Length: 488
Image (cartoon, rainbow, N blue to C red; front, top):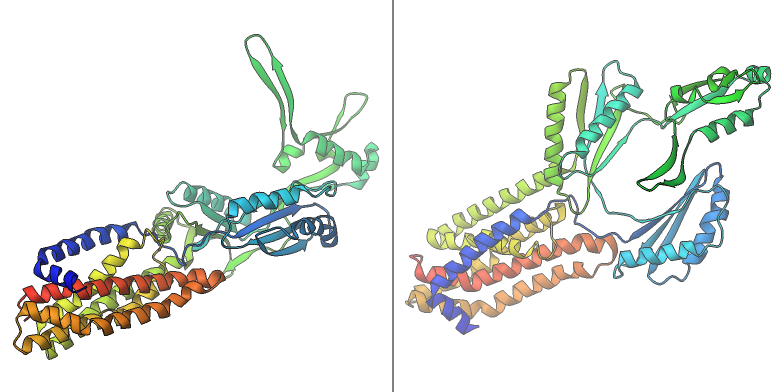
C-alpha cells in the first residue's frame, strides 16, 4: 500500500487523469441511469385467470380452482399459491422462488394447468401469464362541464389513444365508469302476438352476431378466404336482426319484439371530483421506462390539452415523479451544504486550500459511484437517493482525518511530500477499519429476504459503493493534491 500511495504522490498527473475519468464516465453513468419511484425488481409471480360466465364462486372453486391447485402441489420452485373465487371468474396467484427463472416456471405452471383432465363446459380458455412489474407514474382526472358520462368516456378513450402514441408510455388504464352493455328488453305481449318464445329470440341473436371462418376456395390463380364477419357492437346494429320470417315473406326484426339500447351496466362504478363526474386515467411505468421523463411528457400533453379545450379539463391527482424530483433536489442541496460546511470549518482550523481538497472528495465519490451504478442495475429512486443522503454525512470523515494528520506532520517541519506519505500511513489502519465496519453494517441489508431485501439492498449498495470510492479518493487523490498544492 505504501508503494501505491508513494507512486500517486510522486506522479500526481496520474491523479488528474483519474479525476478526469471520474468526471467523464461518472457523468455518462449518471445520464444513463433510469428513474423509478421504487427500485426495479423482476417479476416472481405467475397469474392464472379463469372466466366462467354464470358460475357462482362455489362452482368456480370446485370446478376450476381446486383442480388446478391439486396439480400445483409439490411443483418445484413454487413458494406460495393463493386463489380468489368470484362470481363469473376466479384467479390463482403463484409466487415463485427468487433464485429461479420466471420464464421457466411459467412453462411449468402451464404444464400443470394442462394436466387437469377436464374443465366445466362453457368456461372460457384459461389465461396463464407472468405478472409484469409496473409502477404508478401519474394519475389524472378528465372532467367536463354539462357532459354525459358516455361522451366523457369517448373523450377519455381519445386521450388514451393520444398518450399511447407518445414515446416511453405503454401502461395506461382508463376507469371511473361502469362497463358498457347492450340491453335487449323483450316485450312479452309482442312475443305472444308473433308466436315467438324467449329462447328463439336469444338463438336468433346468437346465430346472427358471429365472426366465423368458413374455409378457403382455391383457383388456378388465387386463393380466397371465406369469412363471415357479422359482429355487432351497438344497439342500432342489433335492432335489425331477423328473428322470424313469415310465410308471406314478412320479416320480424328484433326491434319489433324488443327494445334495444346502449347503456352502462348497473354496477355503481363512478368517480366524482367536487360533485363533477370524472374519468380517471392512470399511467404506469415498466422496468424499461423512465418515471421522470414519462411524467414530464404527460404533463406537457395535459398543458397542451387544457389550452386547446375550454369546457374539458385534465387535472393531475397524483404524480410520483414529484416526490422523486424533490428527493433528488434535496440530495443536491445537501451535497452543496456539506461542501460549504467542510470549507467553512476546515478553513477555521486548518486553511482554505486544504478545506477545498477535502470538500472536493464529495463530488468525486458520487461520480465514481455513478460509473458502476448502471452496471449494477441501480436506478434513481426514493431509496437510492435516500442512501446518497445518508452517506453524505460520513463521506468526508476519512478525508478530514487524513488531511488533518498530513497537516500535523507538515507542522513538524517535514516536506510536503514526506508529510503526505507519513500522514496517510499513520492513520491508514483506523481509517480503513472505520470504512470497512460501516460497509459491513450496511451489507446486512443484502441478506434480507423478500421484497424488503430487494428494496433496501439497493440502498446498501449505494452506500457501500460510495464509501469505497471515498476511501480510494482519501488515500490516493487527496494526499497527491495536498503534496503538490500550496495547502502545505
